[in-house]
Length: 331
Image (tube, rainbow, N blue to C red):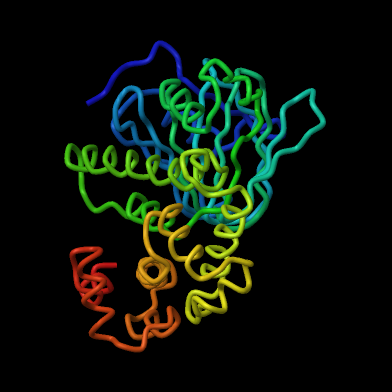
C-alpha cells in the first residue's frame, strides 16, 4: 500500500556536503508513503539501517539501528509541526535550532516528547552506536496526555518549539516493549496490526508510569503528600536493590513509615502489594537480561535474585504465557 505525497514531509541536507549519501537515503524514504522504507548506512560512514514504518496515516514510527564512524551534521526542516515520542537506547544524540544558542541532548536510556516545528534545526551525530525508536503522535494523544497530567488541554504551549517535555529514563517495562517492536518478526498486514497494538501498549505504559511519577493521581488517594513521597522512595529503593531488597521492616524504617502504612499505602498507590511488585519487577528484569544482554536463563535468574528455578518458571509463564527457556531460544 502506498499513498503519494505532493512533497516529502521531511527533508535533510548536510551543510558541509551537498552530496551526502546519508541525507540522500533519508530523503528517499520520505518521498513516498510505502508501509515500510529502509535505508542502509553507506559503508563509508558506518553500518546499520534507518527504517520508516507507516502503521496508518496518523501513526508512523522510525527505527534507527547502526554505528557511525565519523561525525555527521544534518540540517532538517519539516513541512508541518509534529510531536514525537523518542526513545534512545544507544549513544546520546544532540541537536539545536538555528538562530538559538540552546542545545538539546537525549542520553542513552532516556525518552522524551518533542515538538518538531517548521524551524530549521541541526542534528549532530557523533561517532558511536545509535539504537532507538521514534513514534509520531497526533494532537489528540498529546491533548489526552496533558489532561492526564492534570493540566488544561489548551495548554499545549508546554511543548515549546524544539524543546522536550517529561524527559525520563526508560523503565524495564518500556524497554521490553521497544525490543519487541524493533525485533518484530511479522510481515506486511500482520506486522501493521502488531505494531499498532504495541504502540498503544507503549503509550499506555508510558502514561501510567509518568502519571505516578509526577503525582497526578495523588489527589485521588487518602494518603498525605509526605506518605506519597515516602512510598515513592520505598519503590526506588526496591528497584535499586531488586536482587536483594530490604525486608518490610527495614524498608519501613528507611522511609519513615510504619509497616502497616507501608503495606497498605504501597498497594493503594502502585496497585499491588510490595511482595507482588518485587516478583513482577524481577520477571521483567530476567526477560530484559535475556533480550538485551542475550544471557542464558540460569544467568539472568541468578542476577535477578531468584533461588527457586521452578517457582520462577511458574511465575514467568503466568506473566508472559511462555516458558523462559522457550523465550530465550526465540530471541
